[in-house]
Amino acid sequence: MMGTKICAHRGLSHACPENTLPAFAAAISLGVHEIELDLWLSRDGVPVVCHDPRLDRTTDGEGVVTELDWKEIRAFDAGINTRELWSGIRVPRFEEVVDCAAGKVGLNIHIKDPGPDGKLVKMTCDLVRNSSKLMDRAYIAGDAKVLAVARDYAPDIERCCLAGQNAPDAQIDLAVKYACKRLQFSRQVTEADAARAHEVGLTNNLFWSDEFDDAKDYVEMGIDVILTNRANVLLSLIGGE
Image (cartoon, rainbow, N blue to C red; front, top):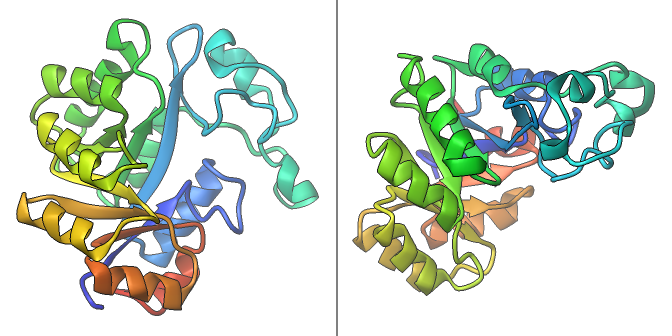
């Protein structure tokens, strides 16, 4: 099982507020190979790290990320789900995560929506290109709309196919169509799917696994990178360095 890579899903999200700097820093300190984060574009053009389209679940604020300005988003408390333990933690912008991670881990950048005229994809690609420490360690993950913009705007930046996750065979075809180097399977992937993806030169990500025995089964099936909310558990048993 050595050689399997661990990607901290939204950082060390089991222990810290997801998609925040403490979650990413904790995962990096453990020695993960990659961190995964989610991006939206604020109304005033700031790349915001948040999974949901709305801020209600993960902060004490309300509203849709794309309909709020960065100043409004930054005022919200992102530590509400851990009570006083992480009180006052703020939603980060992408540049802050780049500063935290550059040269230390790979970045699995899940762009949730490309933005007007692909603005968020293009902005993200520019930020990656401008960081010599990230250029070979970051990749853009997304659906067909995101992948199309990324392929056309920055073909030199690696892409990960999230399109078609409910149909692994079709997902492989889409990964090839958008010239991806990897794809992110759902848990319904089979050994045959993983083998076919390897045959066409793809790296196989899995979303997700949090337990050793479960993860072990997927690794033996042909998974290369496991996204997990419990990086501390899997790193101690799978491919830790």
